[in-house]
Image (cartoon, rainbow over the protein chains, first blue to last red):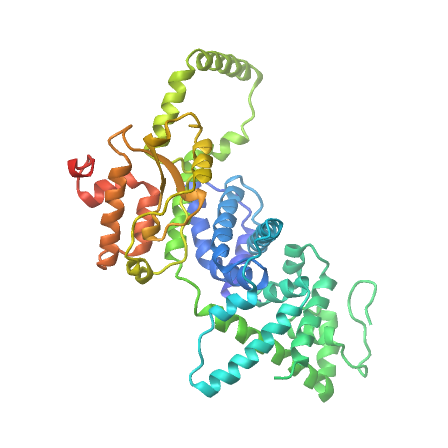
Length: 190
Length: 273
């Protein structure tokens, strides 16, 4: 998202590698970042990863508490956007694994998005739109999870290098995952 | 074709791969790659059409992604209030950062070590006093690191629609876990109510982070007094005089201060004790 207010803010943050003056300043900064990034993180966690929508808020709270500790200890401010997505992603994976271990599988992304669908303006449009959406959701569900993560991270404005850092992948792999996912969507007939 | 440095090398006549087209769409080609790619696109309708297919796929995906979730994301006030409360508690309970990095000079280290040994000796000689103090604090207000409070996604209408405001019983195993957390395993269970910090009647979650052992009789500020506050806040929320997020924030930050504020008193009212 070059040139957008979000990317400008992140660029400013990454250059300002200054030790925080006091905890209340850090607290204020964390709240500002929460206001800026809660919604993108919520979208990514509830759609891109396999955690239930209701658990996403908890993961975000935990992520920003970790950010508070990170900043308060004077650690690096380089690319805080990538840092937030990486921590949230790892917490989501951890939770998903622990739920799988206890055989308590959360609601699927498909079901979550179905429950949140905003009905179309009239019945015909609604039918056509919902068929397209159902088809698209089925494609997204069938994607390998790494491809899906890349797609949803890119949708939230992360550059390829940031996605590579969040997921611990090479730049080439990110590009390949995105290309394959979009090719799959483009080939679909609805 | 991919060069050893990871860049694409091409002649003007060769078509762009899907990957190159996507990199071009996303502005991820290097300056050296972008020139020939754009020059080729300007002359090749086949590649231009494939580029538009990629853009259309991005459009389809984004419409689904933003359209469905964007309009239904819950408002930020409640989660922001909860985060603020947790940050305030974390800031109070943790050591400041300057202390962590403090480098002790040897002489000062010896003095502090001697002081530490003296303190340990004192604690060993008076264990009951220390435990009693800890216990008193734990049962009056929750320990913020153990009980920061947790909420579920619920609207004011849903909260007020629920006619039964009585908290559901906390399972014995969970109660035991709460007592363990607070280090009061040997306490008389009937002296405590394992209580929700944010009552479910105000959208509090059924989660151990929202549970703490509150004494009925140990202090003036006991479980019955807090129950009165919960009922009063819910009435205010449902009468439209207080928003739900504020009620959740007030009760999770410091319920005693909230009681004083909403009942205009410094001490619990006699009808609530």
